[in-house]
Length: 201
Image: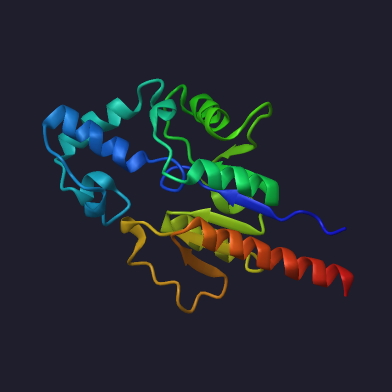
């Protein structure tokens, strides 16, 4: 039998709403509200034109223990991840923020939201291109570019968010843009079908 497809899934900006948490800190500390749609580049502080001194204050707040456990899951992500776990070998590939408890908190968050009785498989790295998978899903353009070049026979999926919409996937053979879980399920089913046909044929 052919092996199960391996899918690598980012966390922040894909299943965990880190950007809104950042904006909530800004509002709590400075009394200024911003919309996630205003985040038009990777650096949230720059996007909302937050003064560098205030960015430092927000950064310090994000270093507090327990932040990774406090993030909200995006609507629909819990059900989607549970479905993916039945379809593929699912690995989470996520960049640690730097606080002393972040990696442990991240794994506990994943376990609490998506797992019952077993542990999530997680790689914590800023160099995500070192990880092999058949499909890689991320919201950061730099990660998608590096990974798709490292694994040209696999498929990279840029998860559509306001901060990555200037990235044009046209002309990139192994990069797709998606914003709905049903699209990802369809891709997985298509790749599984091709894999079975190749194995049988």
